[in-house]
Length: 156
Ligand SMILES: [Zn+2]
Image (cartoon, rainbow, N blue to C red; front, side, top):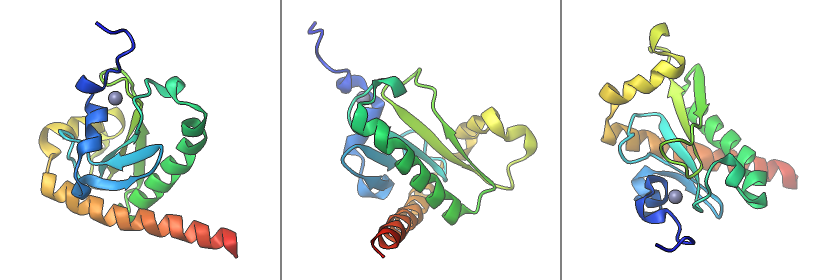
């Protein structure tokens, strides 16, 4: 066993490099956001480092410096499209140590007992691949608009 071999072969988060364009919100040098295989609840996205970096503390300087910007833009896009009163940003780093955060819209029809941690219980009944991908397409456009708006604001 080579001690230097990355965990990529068995890493779900690394395998998302192969995900198709229908699942994708964006992909850049350091970060990507997609609907994750097995987690296709409409309004749920995984924001992940493209490199197999383990835990938040495993991010390098460039990843650390850009994480806040990407999280802000992604959550803004999800808010804009869904109108959800809350958009969660969750990172456990336990089952999949490759750094990622779940960005999850909590819609206004979710009852109080299903909010907070309990929202994750929606995975059992809330998976809907076509609806998750349709929403991803709208969030992708909103994300692109948000980035464009900021770039135009700074060159003025
Ligand atoms: Zn990985």
